[in-house]
Amino acid sequence: MKFVAQRFLFLLLSVWAAITINFFLPRMMPGNPAEVMLARYQGKLNPQALHALALQFGISHQPLWVQYWSYLISLLHGNLGVSVSYYPTPVTTVIAQSLPWTLALAGTATVISVVAGTWLGVISAWHRGTIVDDILPIATTVSSAIPYFWMALLLLYLFGFLLGWFPLGHAYSTIMVPSWSAGFVGNLLAHAILPLSTILISSLGGWLMSMRNNMLHILDDDFMTFGEARGLSSRRLVYIYAARNAILPNLTGFSMALGFVVSGALLTEIVFSYPGLGYQLFTAVENEDYPLMQGLFLIIALAVLLANFITELIYARLDPRVREE
Image (cartoon, rainbow, N blue to C red):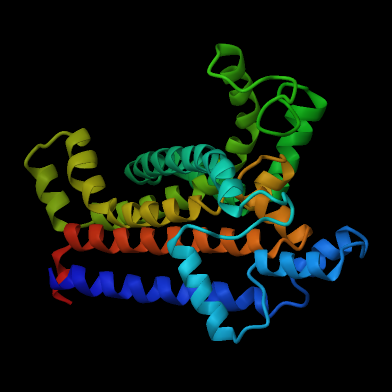
C-alpha cells in the first residue's frame, strides 16, 4: 500500500508539472491565437473584436499567475479553449472527434504488433541456430530500421498508386455517409489496411528481438535443464516455463506503448491524411493553432503518465522485489 501511495503521489506531481509546462510553453512562442485570427481576416477586425478573441483564447493583460489560475480552473471544468483551425469549435470537440480514429488505428496495430512479435520471438529463440532464427531477426530488424514515413510512402506507392488495391488516403470515402452498414465498415477497413500495415511492419522487430533475447537467457537457466531432464514436453517447456518468465519486460513495454497510442502515429497519419490526433497536431502546427496544440500535448502527456503509473503497479505485482526496493 505504501508503494502505491508513493507512486500515486509521484503521478500527481508529474501531472502538475505537465499542466504547468503546457501553460507556459505556448506563451513563450512568438505571437498568439488572436493575432493569427487577425492575420486570417487580413486586419479587418476592429479592436473590440480582437480583444474579445484574446479573452476567448485565454489571453489577457492580467498577471501571469492570474492567467495560470484561470487556466487551472478551466481545466477542472474540462475547458481547453477554442480551436483556431476550426473556429469556433472547442478544442475538446476536435479531440473527441479525432481520438477514436487514433485509438482504432494505432491501438489495433500496437496490440497485433506486440502479440505477433512476442510469439515470433518465442519461436525464434526456441529454434536458435536454425534457418528460422537466421531469417526472422534479420528480416524484422531491417523492416524496423525503415522510418515510418518512408514505409508509409512505399506501401502507398506500391499498393495504392501502382496496383490500385487500396485507397490513397483518408479514413473513408467522402462520398459515403458514416453508418454501421456492411458497405461503410468494409470501406473503413480498406482505408485502414495500409496505415495499419505501416505501423505493424515498422514496430514488429522491436518486440521480436526483445522477447528473443529474454528467452535465450531463460533457456540457459538450470530450471529449464531440470525440466527437460524430467521429460517435460517441448511445448510445456517453451510456453509454461520459458515464455512465462521471459515475457515480463514485454508486458511492461506493452503497457507503456498503450500510453503512446494516444499520440498516434504522427507521420503515418500525415502521409495517409488519417483524421487522428497525429494529423490534428500537424494541422494545429501548420495553422499556428496554439489552443489545439496545447490541448493535444496535454492529452498525450496525461496518457503517457497514466500508462507509466499502471506499468509500475503491474511490474510491482509481478515482481515483488520492486516493492521491496
